[in-house]
Amino acid sequence: MADHTVSITDAVPLRKPAPTTAQIAVLATLAAIGTLATNILLPSLPQMAASLHVTTAAVTGSITVFLAVFAVGQLAVGPISDRYGRRVPVLTGFVVFVAGSIWCGIATDLPSLLVGRVIQAAGACSTSVLSRAIARDLFSGAALGRAMALIMIAMAAAPGFSPLLGGALDHSFGWRSEFVFVGIFAAIAAVAYSVVLGETHRSTRTPLHPRAIARSYLGLSADRRFLVPAATVALIMGGLFAMFSAAPRVLIEGLGFTPIQLGLFFAGTVMIVFGAGMLATKLAPRFGLDRSVQVGLLLAATGSIAILLVSMFDARFLPFLGAMSVFLLGMGIVNPLGTAQALSPFGEKAGAASALLGFSQMMGAATGVWLAATISHEAMFALGIVLSVASLVALLLYTMRTKVSFG
Image (cartoon, rainbow, N blue to C red; front, side, top):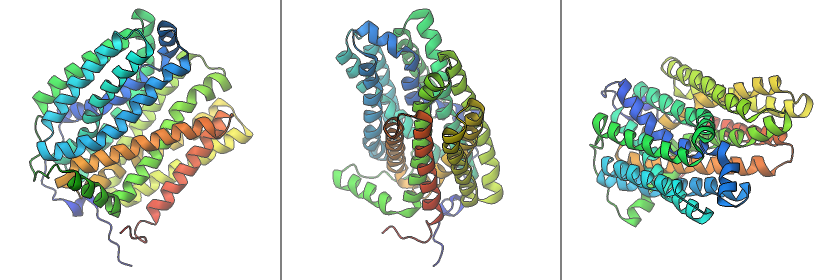
């Protein structure tokens, strides 16, 4: 059967300029808002619960609510940006996010906090999803792959470093200061976006009608050029978020780490993801997207299976760290290159494609978190199962993509 795979270089002309440092910095900031607003709270959940007179488990609902709204909201933001451009949705998202942050900061009970988190997520979803669409507007080919790699590094850095930052803010000023910080951060990011980027959607504006939106999403879902790399990235992202959610149980409850040591572990993961992202930008031009993604998937699968074996035979920190590092290395290669491959053929509806991709990533993340918490009471074993299944399914799906027709 003929190979119908479309590469970045085949899908779009390679006449767009290379990304500048300022552009990448702003795009990375847009992408990181959502994960920053979520993970910065993790060290403060007990203090928030005590202040609001509820249990820590109840306060954890503020994270669940945020992720749910964050995922679904992207499906609306994408088509809106394809019709009206990127600037208005992004700036509106920043305003809404800041308003939600203020609401959360002054909340005196859990229902009020949850309302504020819903508002926050409604704003954050527009900045996050449109960071990818804007990158697709501005760049193509290897430049797009590089931009996606750096954006992915920012999305990994936010959950990696934000627990340390949140712990420091909570210790010095109390948990409400975390909402003050993210609100100020978003306001500064809005100004930077207006100065550095502004409107980037220059191609044909697509109609904003329910049927047209439904056709757009259905068309993307049936197009294997989008479906396979998007599903691959969603599976790998599910594994990443499963790791973030399971790490406290693995390290604190299982291996006796302190919260500070846990924060340092998260920060260390950023360096691995950073190195992987840099490696991805070198691999893709030399070996092509397909082979590079397959290498990343093989690494992710190897690390995942190693974690499972460690949990069964040698559940100590150093073997766990080594296996997790291999998984993160593979994830850091697959995520940016798979994202670029999914978006590249769809310039005129990059907003919708980015929205559907973001939705699939967040749903993958939610599923990974849920499975890691429910499969087994042994946190490392459950994590090994989730990572192994996700990475092996992703590898099989990606390898078979040229042999299966999706409509």
